[in-house]
Amino acid sequence: MMAENPADRVVLRRLAPEDVSVVAGFEREIAEISFPDDPVTDPAFYERKLRQAAGDAKSEPMVGEADGRIVAWAWIGTRENFITHERYGELRSFYVVADFRGTGYAMKLMRACLDYCAEHGLARLMGRVHTANEAMQSVYAMYGFDAKHVVYERRIAPAGEQAMPRPRPKPGEGLFRRRRGGKKPR
Image (cartoon, rainbow, N blue to C red; front, side, top):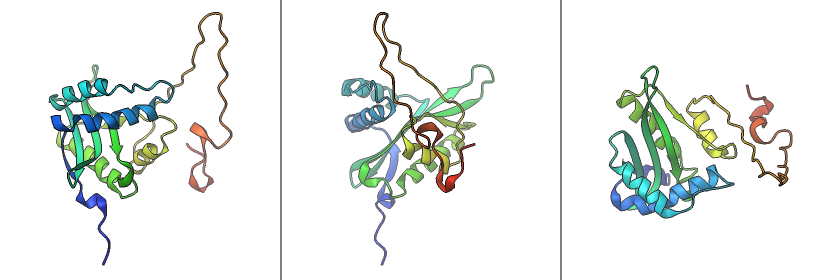
């Protein structure tokens, strides 16, 4: 007999007010991954933002719950292109707790996000990811997302101070790392 996959016990539902403090912790961890140089770590900031999201009809904040515990989080905002008026989804957050990673639940959660967009007439789903977040990049790649923009940033030292040089990535690391099988990224 096969062991039960923990991902099979997860029920997806809309964010409720009583979920806010748990999900605020997820948002803090996402910020630490996405903005390693200057993350926002104040739980009150995230709690305010999440309370607004719970009541926002133009977004879908969803939690995955298993056995009374929140184990996943995704937040889709509905956006509209101001020129073409095309409506699309923006994946604002995506998170799976550590002990549910590797169970396939991230794939189910992304499928639910794509299904939400299709059911609500959103033409596409877009999301951002930090260059070091290879796990999320893998989820995007498995679902056929295309990288569209690369943002470069350089810190500027105040006048009179010298900027500290940043270490350069070694060949095969960072944005230009080789993919499995030795193929270069396109």
